[in-house]
Image 1 (spheres, rainbow, N blue to C red):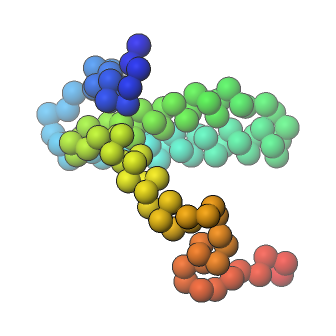
Image 2: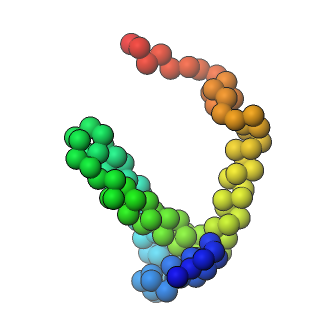
Length: 115
């Protein structure tokens, strides 16, 4: 069982289909992550709107989403650890004292949801 993100990325390679064509490979990983993210959203909707507990489905589909993220990183030769660290740094720079609505509104407009 993988214990680090690097080990997880390597493990994902072992469980992935091998492709003869790099374009088909990245299309598979890109479309796959989109589908799994949609499944996460669907399970959340069913759990909270339809009152049909799909929390296990949320958990499973999050795992599948992470698998595709690892495969996209593998495709480009990126480290998942570096991606996470880079994202954390970006968020830390953007919100040094925690989330700030003013900093989140990058285009300067606020949507009036009461209409």
